[in-house]
Amino acid sequence: MAHTAPDELPDRSLSNSPASVIDGGLIVIVDPISTGACLAKDLDNRGYRIVRVWSDGCPDQVKAHTMKGMEVTWVGTVQVGTEVGEAASAIRKLGGPIKDVLVGCETGVRCCDLLAAALGCRGNGVALSELRRNKYEQIEAVRAAGLDAPLQVLAASTADVEAFLAGQPHGASPFKAVVKPVEGAGSDGVSICDSPDAVRAAFGRLEGTRNVLGLVNYEVLLQEYLRGDEYVVDTCSMDGVHKVVAIWKYDKRSFYGAPVVYFGMRLLQLDAEPALSGMVAYVEGVLDAMGIRWGAMHTEVKLEERGPVLVEVNCRLHGGEGIWLPISQLCLGYTQVSAMADAYLRPTAFDVIPAAPTALRAHGAWVTVRARASGTIRAMITERLEMLRELASYLDEYLPLGVGDTIAMTVDACTIHGCFNLAHSDAAQLEADYALAQGLVEEGLFDIDATGAAVTTA
Image (tube, rainbow, N blue to C red):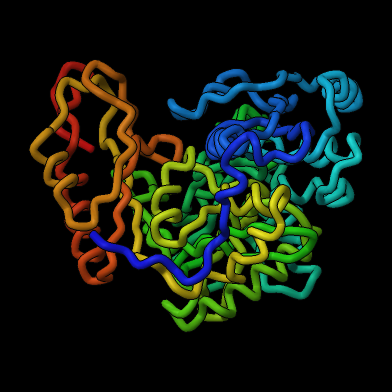
């Protein structure tokens, strides 16, 4: 498949080797896991000296959430305890000036703000740190800024749940509401409820439990259900200048009883749909309301009849271990990871990136690998795998599991078992391949032994 390069793209020819690094300053990455590990690898490849910091909110089991091949050479590793100042002192002792403090994963958002302030580095400050992790607080900040936001209640008791239910529009048909952790990630713990009793039950399941990030759900977020299509607007900001580095349209469906499962997403350019320009302006307003001046943000928005409405802002890179990055690189010529690094370290390259993606080199889509049963993989369904790899738009894949591995039934973003990345210069070809790929995944890529009974599934 041939692709035509855009007229102008960031020239990183001078930043891909250690010889191009001007000084020996340190770059600190807080919780460099998931796509944060890709950021660390990018900086390591550019020749920068990087320090790994584990926040006090990052559980040990999450620290290993990194793809193979993302290994880097760390100048040092610092564990943050109860005092951020002690961690700042430990970092200073590693030698060299500290250039920047960057966040790698959701668990490190607050710590990154605090550490950047303690080290005197540029960042988003600490005054609004709470709302950058707390989904309830950020929605209220957006509402206070005069932007549309969903109706919501932060529930710490059954009385709060009843107050939320009493405030729902009477006669709305059919009834729907969202129940989710106030500080979660992916779609962990998210319930789409079809009745008041389902809301009560979902609250009971979450109250006092630990989410995927290891945080206790002391409070649960109850929200108006937004019925429109869902989009992701990925941005990078440099000193208050926001640039949209990717627009994705989610393909989320119910899956064997799980209400919110990622089937895939498509990369869009700004004129792909009439409402996208307004959505971009809305998101930029959201970022301003949250005090964002630096770094990567992953903003989820639903397009309602009344216009774009915020689902949540994740104040870090688009996650999923960065397995979608090849699509961005091929279709745009840059990624959110490279744009973030440029924003901090090579501003002239960041300046060249367009304000929003207006011209794609190719059309791209991401297809998830799912499992409708839990068990042990007995065999790979090679015929279907080969059919996927022979698609005209096949770009690459991430398929970490194999024969003998344990696989969990897909119920959320954390139980997606890989992906197939697709890209093609012909939009119609991509759409045809996307549909075929979804069908093959649905038919099954694994032969699973589930509690003694073999199940062919994906």
